[in-house]
Image (cartoon, rainbow, N blue to C red; front, side, top):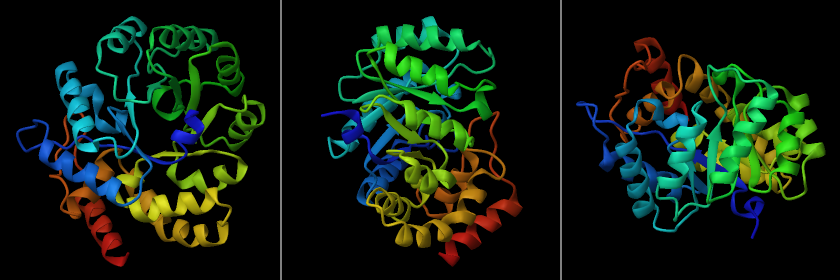
Length: 294
């Protein structure tokens, strides 16, 4: 079965809950995982950047990964985030992390370094060669400082056998359409932009890896599945219901926004590790009002 079949629909980029002493809150993580699965998401992504992984130690990452496997318990597929700007270090993680219960690795493009397109190609080629699982590219230029061009994406898709798809998080719809037009037929393309998934599915995207699905998994996954069935009339009703919520999620910071939502829903404590801090009191009030209005 191809990853297009396994990872179509809604994946959720799980946050990492923390206790007030900044340790990982595994009880809250269990609540969150059960919440998203019970409300219809198709798969979970652990150790992504929404999980504050730059501030999570290697030991903690392995503990979170093993715990996630145990709570998911084969109910949905698991994708593991292993990305960054140290190619050699990522190769070590790919070879030593417990990936046996995952279906794919999602790897965010190198941040800060701003490699050339050739540098990005060689980085991903090296990771793909080392990965025991299919590799998903993750283009998020607003955070990394460098866009993975459509041409480089298609080159990787066609020339590197173990690269199976991309999470595309640019708001450049022309680039999105170029990838869809030119991709190999079995190359998975999912969105990294919750607010754009409706038009992106209309263009041919296979689904989304979502931040919003942490906070409103039932509505969001229903909307995505309606789009995939071609029922855009029904999907638009949910999309516009959630539209303000998308803005609130990212108004100040991700994952501070989604953690504020989950705190109001009683799933987690509103704790983040520096340099990220909770949202302002003003935004927290807006989020509370939005939840009540839904």
